[in-house]
Length: 149
Image 1 (cartoon, rainbow, N blue to C red):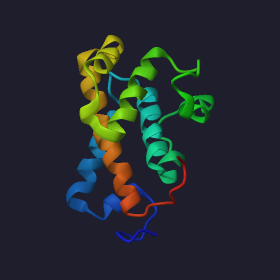
Image 2 (image 1 turned 135 degrees about the vertical axis):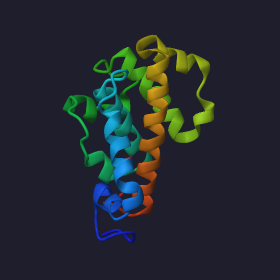
Image 3 (image 1 turned 30 degrees about the vertical axis):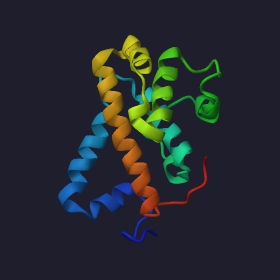
Image 4 (image 1 turned 90 degrees about the vertical axis):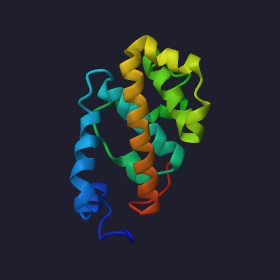
């Protein structure tokens, strides 16, 4: 149970905030339909943020299907051959974004643009901002248990 609402679930908690809950759900759901960035790549980025922030609740959620082997190997994405160059480019930005989004270099941005274009890069930044914020809010709201690193 969260101190914000009688719920362990983000959607249920957001539902107790009617002024923003529906709008947020529509925004969040739209990321998984973006034509510029594969949903599987976004899910890997969301899961990596969950690992970095220690959010077991977010780690256990599944927004879209991904290869279970990739999920299990996510901590070693930089060297594991299961990850494509495109996924690595996005995961590199994800890790830096979690620490300091201003530290992302032009070269790192260019690596994402090489695979997904300028629109894909912007979509990635927008999604990471929302994912990062929601993971942090979930931890603040005490949704689920912290634990995955």
